[in-house]
Image (cartoon, rainbow, N blue to C red; front, side):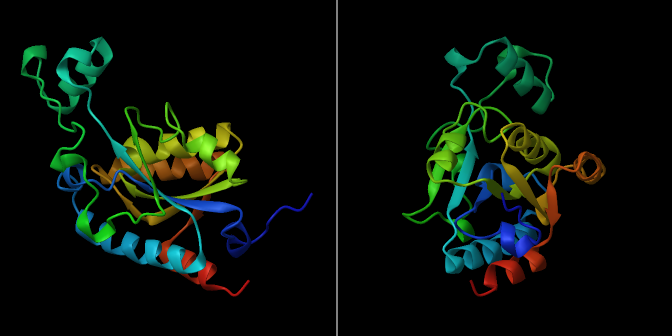
Length: 208
C-alpha cells in the first residue's frame, strides 16, 4: 500500500475530486467577502479543469412549506430569527434564483451538480456513491460557509474513509470567529489536510 505524502500526490485527478460547496446566489449575498471568495474559487475551478480533475457543486435546498416538519421549521426559525413558525419562508426553493450557482462559477456539462437538505454534502446525497464508483479516495473542498457546512462535510468525509482536503482561504464564513474555531478543530483532529489556494494551484499544475 502506497500512501501519498505530498499535496501534489493527493491532488492527482485519479485520486481526488473538487467540491464547490453552496456557492449559490442566495447564500453568497449573505456572507461578507463572498465576492473575493468567489474569485479564488474561480481560479481553483479553472486549474482543476486544466488538470482533468472531476468537479462537483452542491446546492442547499429548502423544503416547500407542506414538507417542512418540526426540525426543518425549527432550523428555519433560528436562521430567520423568528419565534413564529407561521412567519417562516423557505429561502432556497428549487429553481429559485437563490439556489443558482453564482455566475462566475456556472457549472459545465461535465460537472456533477447535486442538491442537499442537510449541512454535510454527503448526508442524503449521491456524492459518496459517485466517488466510490469513480475510484476516488479524497475530496478537496472550498465554498461557503466554513462554520456551517464545510466543517461537517470534512468530518463526514473522514468517517466515510474519504480524505478531506480543505482549501482554507477559499472558504467563506458568516462568522469569522466561528470559522477559525472550525479550522482549529479540524487541525486538532488531524484527519483533514489543510491547504490554501496557492498551494492547490501549484500542486495541480505539476506535470504528471
